[in-house]
Length: 75
Image (cartoon, rainbow, N blue to C red; front, side):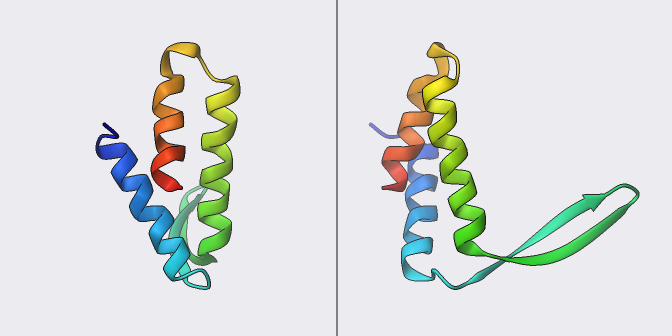
């Protein structure tokens, strides 16, 4: 049983596989201002995947299963 977060991770992985050169729009808070930028999907999703991997290894033991589930869903 993967769960909803694993399924969302699978959709994120599939979108990266299907559209690797796509740009993702992000709102970046810069002090009092908010800037809208378009960032390559590989950068955004790659950063997310790296954080999931780091948290699964060095994060708290009680929540490690959720991080591994996100990684499994992504792959």
